[in-house]
Length: 152
Image (cartoon, rainbow, N blue to C red; front, side, top):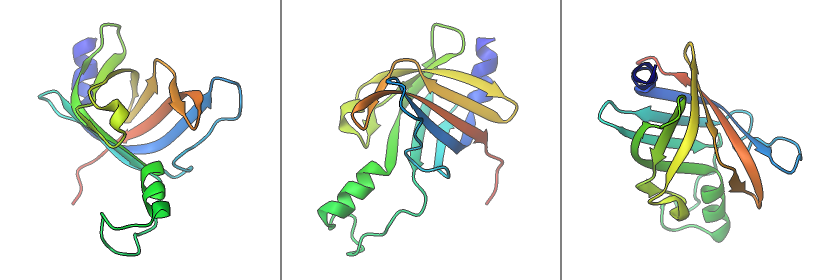
């Protein structure tokens, strides 16, 4: 079973939905809107990369990545999630570990985070095992991904 999950994960997946369920019972949230964009890649040699963002992000007025207003930098940081590193199957069936060697959110650098993983057809469902702080509250995150078909 574990080798099957590993084999099924290999490849590229496009983000379909990203939902946060607050632990305090408040309404669910979609921090990247109901049309999130993103890719998650799993390589056969054990590396992964996740990139998620809100659609239609504003361009910097300057056209320079390092020259922006505080508002532009804030919008950039709050509408994008990115991290990469090693991955492996977890000890419990149906779990995987994402290593975060690099991350847009510096607090995640060096972390290893456990995810629940379930594949149904061409869909991958990943969810947090431990609550995550988001917008000042503890949430459980669920992401749905669709297997990419090779296109150029």
